[in-house]
Each structure stands twice: as structure tokens, then as C-alpha cells.
Amino acid sequence: MTAAFLPYQELTSLCSRFVIDRQGQSADFIPWLHLHRCSAPTAPLHSPMTPTLAFIIQGAKSLTLGQNTYRYGAGQYLLTSLDLPVSSWVMEASGDIPYLCACIDIRLDRLHDLLGRLDLLKTPAVDEDLLGLSVNHASPELVDALTRLVRLLEQPGDIAAMAPIIEQEILYRLLMGPEGPKLIHMAMAESQSHRVARAVDWLRSNFHRPLKVEELCERVGMSQSSFHHHFKAVTALTPVQYQKRLRLHEARRLMLVEGLDAGNAGHRVGYQSPSQFSREYGRLYGLSPARDMESVRENAREAGRGGILPGAVAAE
Image (cartoon, rainbow, N blue to C red):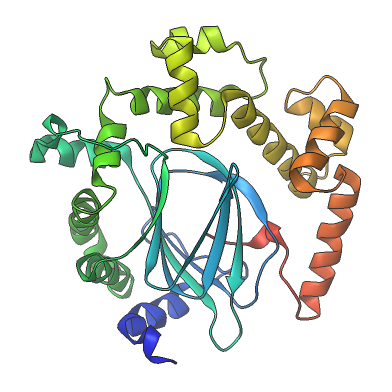
């Protein structure tokens, strides 16, 4: 192990011990903590990403949102403050130095509770960058709190008492860090970012329905011009693009996991025209639905021979 990884030796050991299933994911001793391991680079995984703190212990990963690509590695964390349709893939991983990542769900009720007690809602200053995704270097205090949280897996009897306390500390470290103003702004009920988050929640639950932007604006209490501006500032996508990503991600999941053919998958997510579904699928994934499914199967066969893992089993 190189010197760059020495600060995370305990996290490396703990993560390696407690990642136990064949897809490189941890058991749910702490339901909102997820440990991931991957021993080879992966193909892209296209999926919605919920509010999450993802700290890289070893290896490196890339993520694409809209037209922007982010690369982050050991000692850095990815923070998302609302649901976003992203594509991600592990870039650096091997059998000797696997990709290791500790992820924590950002539970908004816990964030609101902490904000109320800190009285930070009165200071919602935020700059023009409202994007609900960022990459930062983790402070020593944040790494220490993460390490103590994962260490609880060795003493499950302490989890009920100690995990909520450490979760509160982690949220506090994030609030005091460079993305704190964004989190505060997102949590404020009257803020534009919070209203966009409400719109995102509605889209996630109703992506198969026709999108009527004027009705969605009325639902969240925004003018159409303000809604379009702030929605793209927060998500890097227009509302139509966001809905399209959700539809295509779900259609791909239906074909991969449930074995649906392209016609049925497209219809299930709201497409009335099979040709339109195939065109838009090809623009996003670079292949037609049929060729993409064949590529996934080939990647799976390659994984069995020690090659690149298919995106279907990639972890955060």
C-alpha cells in the first residue's frame, strides 16, 4: 500500500471485512450506511442517485451529469443534495488495490432536525452555483467521524445508541464545509432550490406521465421562467431532459433486470412511439436497446474471464 493510502488504513481494513456479498456491497447493519468494493474497472452504470455522501477510500470513479463529468478519488467525497439521473463508472480498481467507497444516505429529516437546533436557517447565503452535486476533499474531522461510524460494525450492540450521534456529527461537518450553504439552501422550505427538489420528487414518482411544465410550476409555486432557470441550475438538466433520463434509465433497468423487450420497456415508462424510444435510447447510451443488451451480456462474459465488470453491478 502506498503512502497516499495510509490515512485510510483502518477504513480500508473495515470496508474489506464488511463488504460481503458478491456484488461488492455491505450488509445492512446500519441501513443508511453502504460500503462498496470493486476489483476491476466497470462499464458505465446509468441510474438515479439519491442525496448521498460518497467517500472514496481507494481507487477512483467518474460520474457524468448533463454535459459535465466529475472525477474523484481517494480522500475525496461526492455530495448530492437531491435525486439526480447520473452515469457513473469505476476508473481505478484492481485485485491488489480494489476500489473502496463508504456511502451515507443524506436523510433530510435528520438534516432538518440538526439545522433547527443550530439555528442555521437564518443564514442561507449561497453563491450562484446551486448545482446539487459537488466533489470535495474530506477534512480530517469528517474522515475521523466516518471511520468511527464504520467501526461500529465491529460492535453491533453499540449501533442503536452511537450511530445517530455520529450521523449528526457527519452532517454537522458537511454543513460547516464548503457545501454547507447549498445544503442549508436546499433545506429551506421557501427557497427556490427546495422547490426544485419538490419538483424532482414529483418527477421521480410520475416520470411515466406526460409532462405539463405549467402544472408542475403551479404545484411548486414558481413562475415558468424562474422554474426553468433554477431547475437547470440545480440539476444541470431541463425538466424535459430530466424526465427523459429517468424514463430511459428505468427502461434499461426493466430490460436488464426484468427481461422486458424494448417495446414493452419503452411503453412501460411512457413512450407511445417505439421508434422515438429507440432514437432517444441510442442518443443517451450510444447503442440501440437490442445492441446495448447484447453489449451488457458480452461484458458479463468478459467479467467471468477477468475483464471489465458490467455496469449493472457497479457500486457508488
